[in-house]
Length: 123
Image (cartoon, rainbow, N blue to C red; front, side, top):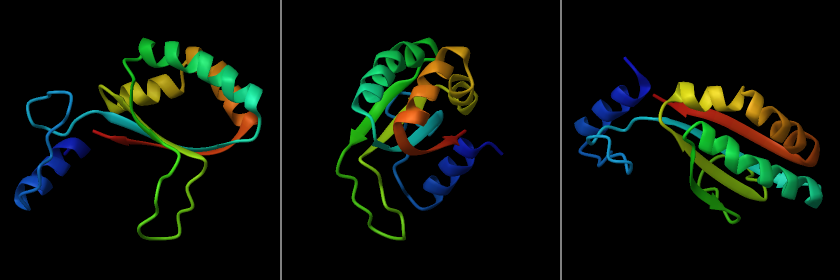
């Protein structure tokens, strides 16, 4: 069972609203990237952001949220300077974006200009 379908069934069983904001028929679908970044080089941050937008567009990625004040409610997690959530049509699209030639240069810049953690999840 795909992750999105399993989550939809769990939500339905517990009467939790799990509609996808992108209008996918009420199912929670798609792939997501959650990044936690602390920039150590301002010039690198600017260069990364200049490259990021076109790479997201090429893979139908959409910035869903970015927050400089993420608040930990449970656990040991210590968020970085900014926490970002990016949505893609599918998990495979998110993975393809991350592994793409288009994103490779931006990734190199982010890697040398920040301390970051990134996860991919979804259907």
